[in-house]
Image (cartoon, rainbow, N blue to C red):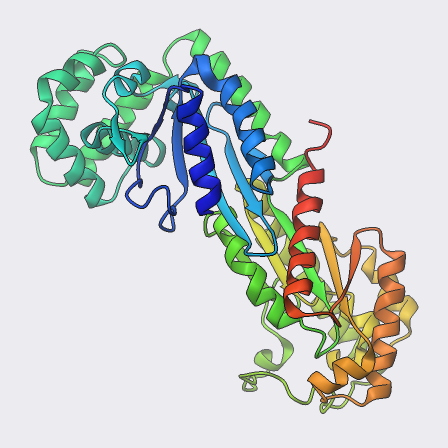
Length: 438
């Protein structure tokens, strides 16, 4: 990430792009300090910024894996090389600090007051704190007390100046109410009233209402093509699932700014069957996956139907809404397909045609990664299953992978670093392909 950020800011300065980092800049350019990069670009430089960004991505072996939103596009970036994988999220304000499609703070004023932090253009702290307060209350109707206190201090230091520049966007009633609210102690009712007044002003007029309507309509496209991404990782015990997931999770989580979700096997909207009957759930790693007796035909059907309900309803109620709402990544350690590969683990005993028919109704992940290696190698790592059982599972998994267009095979018989790098490369390339025709 250090190389990417250094290259980005160096290029911005070299090409004289008029920009400003809005907040959380203290650790730049070494890192984002666990935050995202909130950056404002002057409207005249927006096209040049994206051309520059493309060049920096190529130079740093990074890719845009998610992009969505108008006026303030959210861009998720992930990079992978032989040294280290990284991820980060950019919120790019394209010449406007918006509430819906209206500006809530004058951009030219903000850009005229920037300061330097290690040769990086950053916002004046007082401006940034007042903007953060306005952004929070306009979008959420409330804010944390921290934002209120910071805005209050900034307002008191620059009351005359801010009253003048904000009066060009809002009206005198809003200025007076803002002043009255910030003169008091934190008062939720007053803040909510201020937010409602600000929203009415910023959404007033037929032109702005039409613009807001158009903007809202573009959001419905997310239901067709969600920005979020779902990955299922399959493999027999000892194939390296846990280790690889542990390695790829940090950079992917950084890329979507802490919106990575992990689930074991299924969405887990409903409890497993053992919990229904108040049986204690086993904790820690499973060392004897085939120790439990398989259910009979009727019991197997009931078990399969119960968990299939979770895959279907759990996906549409739990997973899909998050993928639509924001940039997010879901990682499933195993998935429904395990019922075809290892029925004993699932304690079912059914003909494969039944499982395949129900599979038609199961939502598919965007990417299925199949981890496999020579059975002898897997057995040497984790001798929990007999070698003949491991061999059977590897063969079934390879057959599944060959017949499923969303599945990719990774040979984990190589070094761990090679397996992790190949996994990251496949994830990044698959996510990038979603934007190939845009």
